[in-house]
Image (cartoon, rainbow, N blue to C red; front, side, top):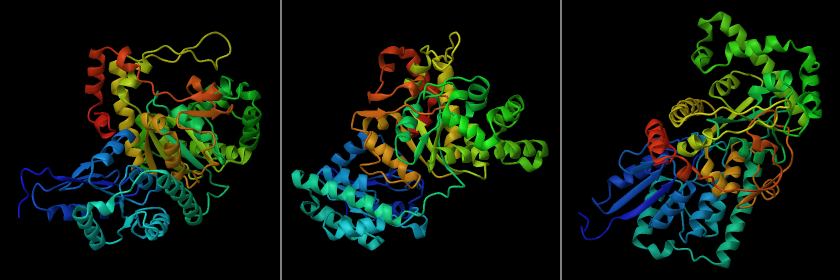
Length: 490
């Protein structure tokens, strides 16, 4: 049987989200179902994230928030995993989602809160749940045959249901979440990527969540903090900051107990991008292995002391450097999670072309480095490629600057889920749809915006469209291909 060539194919959209766990089972089911449809009758599109790329259906790894919304509106049928935010967005678009929850027993998630959540709201008629391949096939066939049964009428009732979905999801996640990290092994939430990608803003927003502390770029602590005594985000000089003073005392008996020149030399001998291969073949380099172990022990003491002094369960470190992220993976005393922060490379290039003063330097004036568009494009590609490789080794998600500005509450909730923290009203009280309230923080280094506090309006910076010459835009696009396409910058 063949499809009528005069009838446009119906679009079936599947959203697997951005969780680092693979959901290959659902991709395989949809591929098999697509193969059985009459040619030209169906267009199946799968946003597969970290999962395997589909063989028969169309595949896109990641979309922006705006692209996801447009795809939902255009599709006749929408399938998704059991993420509460995704389900709510699909229902808000007037469509009843077909939900296939992830199963932790199959390595698809950290726990079974999606199964519990989907089962509960399925009984209330808010989704069509499919836990097996036959159930998915039946739901897809029914949605195409009886589309009127897969329609949700937006309105006050739907708004009430959406609020109920989010509330119940929070309860389920709390009940099923495994115990938090032990106090003797801090979780380090590492923000990796290339500079000017919104990492400092994300760091500050996360630092306002109870149980998290924003520490800035700890990679620079020895040179800029202990040796240079530059200003902490709280406004005091580093050696006068009460928090960092106590951290130094707990970790080392005081900062002055360290031979800081020797510490910096040790750091420089192990923490370089060119040393990344040696980190995984250190047995072949006994001298490097010994230095790596010594520096890892030093960092373990530092982060453990910071957790003890601050009382935080999670330390947010926005150092970004690829080599430092790989190095933290070698520290046995920390539990590493990664947020890969990315931004349109043209916006990054435009930002690196602007001169910025470093206000944390006390005497005289100091400025951040300037990069040409070509150098920025090359560094954007190199740094993001290295961090992307690290993301395959540790629990991770990708956060795009554009999505963080467009829907900050959703992006912060995704990050909190990565570290097993709730993302309810209390945790997000400082975030609205277009603004964030920030208090002074104890960031040790970073972008000058770390000194901002109070009510901060979130506005997407698209100044590159006017500030970056068309020729430079084209050059950056060429140098950042194909990674920019992977992150949705087409």
